[in-house]
Length: 124
Image (cartoon, rainbow, N blue to C red; front, side):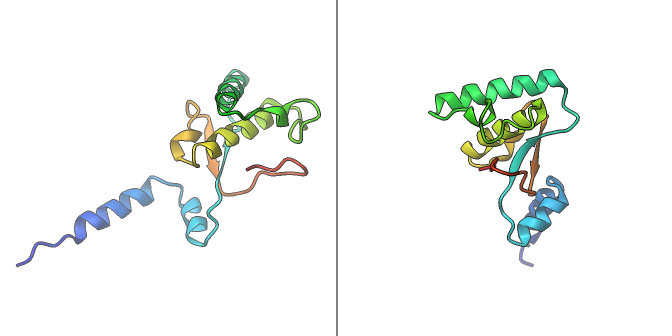
């Protein structure tokens, strides 16, 4: 009797499915492949400020900037920590190829398939 290799493959796919939000998987399966990283609404202000500092410091080393969240920038309004953090966290996430680990931010990041862009503030 031949040894079946189906079980390891099935196990791998089941593990993969269980490790992601099923809503995201359904949208990705339907061709909606763009994902964004935003700050979790439950994140406290200190963590949001730290996320902004970390993301902007990283982006600066890549020749990018955080001007979009500065006064007059496309994403300045609304002037809230969660908005500004979400914008720069997404820039960091996109610069790192949209890899899941690049949206961790000490467990304060959330990957979404809903485009959080608004007005002139366009998420990359």
